[in-house]
Structures are given as structure tokens and as C-alpha cells.
Length: 165
Image 1 (tube, rainbow, N blue to C red):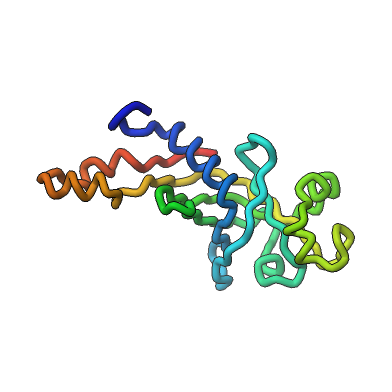
Image 2 (cartoon, rainbow, N blue to C red):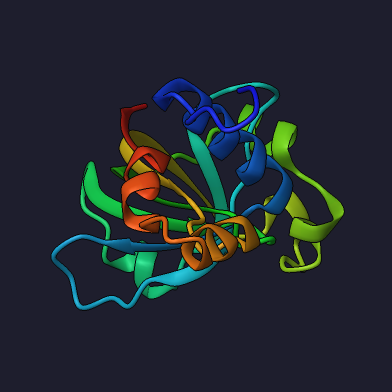
């Protein structure tokens, strides 16, 4: 992107993956359930564009509410509030030991007394299918342009993209 060019859907998607890898927190819930979305730490592998992994405990409402291939929605806000996303996909338990070993870190370990062999440990696999990604329209630049008579809604419409993941 140069200057004031609007980002392409591919550029917005790349910004989303970069921000998620850095900030890591998503709100995730099951579609069509009474389970309130909750914040969880997203784990990504290398430069992968999915799946998104979440370590959690076996007895959580989210895990107990899962059926095979449950539809789920995850929302994301970057720490600087300059990128927002809603991601839809399938959520399932996937306790693949190789993946657990690959993603394991001291932050996850702090939650599970029994370490990688803790009987409560559950690894969730979120397969993103599509997303809406927005860039923030309330920046200082938008405010200045509004003072000069520009309509920020016109410019902002190009700062959102629907992408298949």
C-alpha cells in the first residue's frame, strides 16, 4: 500500500494474521448456543493461515458444548484498535500430541499443574472459513478529513473486506 491507497482484501487478510500472531487474544463462542463468547489465547504455527489453536480445560462450557464440527465465531481487536475482525469457522477438540508438544509454552504450562499430561488439558482446533476484517475509521486522519468537509463513511467503505480463509 502506498500513500492513501486503500488496502486490497489480500492486504487486509495479511494484516489480520500478522496482528493475531502478535496480539493473540480472540473472543470465541459457539454459534447457536447460550455459551457466552470468552477471551482465549490463540496459538498459530509459523506462517500458517490456520488452523488457530486454543488450549483450554476439559470441563469448560465451550468444550462441553461442542459437537463434531461445531460452527463457531471468533472476534479479534488488535491492541492498537486499528484492526477488527470477525472470523467464522469450525471448532473441534484435537488433542494431537505432536501439535500439543509443538505449541506448548510456559504460559500454557502455568494453567495445567500436570503439564502436557494433565487430564484436564484440551486442545481446540479452529478452522477459519471466512472473515470480515476492518481497519479503524476513527483515526486522527479521518477526524481531520471530516473537519475539512470529507465524508469518512465514503473512505471507510474501502477499509473492510470479506475474505475466505
